[in-house]
Image (cartoon, rainbow, N blue to C red):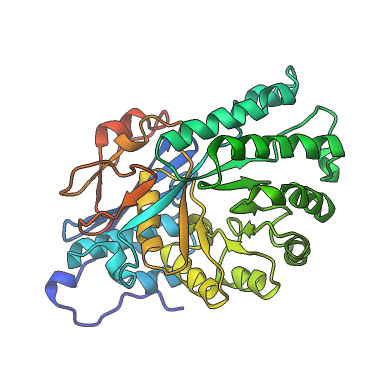
Length: 387
């Protein structure tokens, strides 16, 4: 595809060029690669790349950042993080929020679910010095669930692929009856603690065979789960279908599917009840919306996978607001105390996330601004601030 600059005669206020793309990496619960795209009009945009900064950003210099679709078509790297920054620039130039550029909003606030991990330290249980059953206990799961619900969330998720006993053969991807019963006890404890009015999901992280996933799912049917996530390895479309057909528990997958084509294959195989696209992994906000539309045609709801800083979380919230079949957006940083400090709303007061929801920012672009001091404080050693 031709990558030359579009020479159409735009009005001067929309005739911009990208002059620089820079990045810095922060250490949150994951590495967050913040991206800044600058233009010759003095308007800049921010985005986020999961894991680090973009590769080969210089090839976009001289291009008009308002041509988001054209630029997205000709790049994979630097990819979604730069695309978010381009949407941010375009919103600022046109003086509208990003959700308006994506077709307008179905909702004013975006529901957020809290990833509650394993209820205790992963490292402690995986060190080999402690029986995992003494760390991943029904009580620890119930206490973690209570803390999250008391913080205002009405939807949450736990990891359920945590180790059960030291001699489990992880290569075989199969659980014995003792391991199955341990996992059922964790689910039972959480549901008893929080009641039936809170949406509750569990994540298996692609770790099991169809046989084990099916046995476990059948045991979990009485607990009215919102979803059981990634029971078998990604892109094993028929395996997902077999698990889904064997249980009434909704099966969710999608965070590792990389584009609308792979989601189309999963939809055609009837391998999921709930889709979980991640804007970072599926190609950005544009591809996310395409995927959500494909899912909507098949009556499949969307729960957005997200392990990002507030930057990409807000970007995902704009996209989530612009599709009809959205259910919830993941929040993976309950244990990062400075998450809320990194950004502020442009021209507005109040936190980004409150009571399990994000009120959509109404400022232009993403509607947020980076606090340069916080970014610098939590940058990886040797990283220079770009703000």
